[in-house]
Length: 447
Ligand code: GLY
Ligand code: MN
Ligand code: MN
Image 1: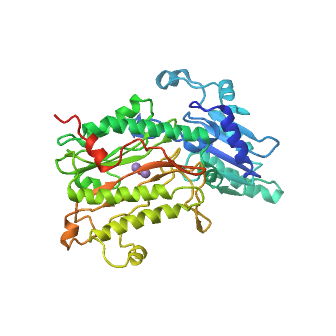
Image 2: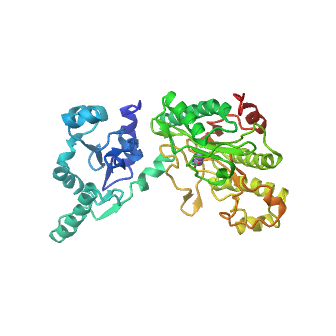
Image 3: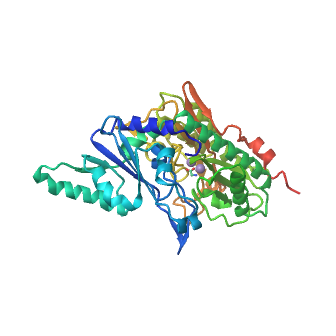
């Protein structure tokens, strides 16, 4: 249960049951993914199954049924197996699992075919994510077929399958205090790891070494590891949004963009800082850094309950475009630049995404046709950036001298922000961000 109490999961199930009348939800564990032949990737639990049950064990399956007085939670788990447990570690027994997860019934996965059809049969709708092609999916489809055939004999049964996210995402978008605590912890670990890493930035160091410092600091501090593959992009690699090769050497005079986050109890942080490898930003690098920092501050200033998530992006975009116009990189009418998306080659992504159990967490950015309004308990990133991709990858024609001076520069500055009742709290605020602060910290182990 990763330190969460049973009551939290019981309360979440009770709440989701309010929106599930006449339906059943089937949540399988994340599949074990193979790295090569018989070697597995390190297992990461499924966010939805964990959110509603606390279960992190591979091979499990929860069936949640709100129909009945207090609803029910049936759990299937992998059976005990002395030989397998010798290789992979202990599995829970049925009674043990029932106790730990507060389940109404626990069955062995070997009995799936025996019990699952019966559990699905009273539902009109099955909340289940299609597309895995698993044995569970076959049983879900079979239950629809059985019900369709039986309907002529007045036997009722499931008629539709819906995505569990339809009822889960609106709940997950607002974090409860226990979740905020884990995201806060992930942010603390990530900030500490960056503080250990900054002195190591200097010419001649490999991008992979910077990645290794961060990932090792995450683990040292008890995090599960990196929330996503750590990005260390030096020189023009800083213009590649999700660069993960991390196999180049840091060159004097270049920037290095570092985007990393720790995962703590399945909750994530996501921070980006852009650093001068020499220890000093050049004038051109500083031009861009100051614009992006200003957009980051403006985005953070915007965040408070009642404001739309679109407004954060629009305010940050306004600062970025204004800055590019003042440098002479963009010219003409600002509204037209926005309308025709002329800025897009330099800023191709959004300013924010939700943050939580998933790094790019669930939850729509619109509500019906309207943009989502911020509420206390939401957690999101702010990550404006400007990227000047070298040709031939770039679609921009570098015909003027102004633009050519910026080619190869990529700057992103990313922080994690909690919406509070009267504004916001920057969970990553303790990590320095101004150019002066960054210059004083980078490469301080230089010899
Ligand atoms: N690290 C991925 C992102 O910032 O969205
Ligand atoms: Mn992000
Ligand atoms: Mn990031």
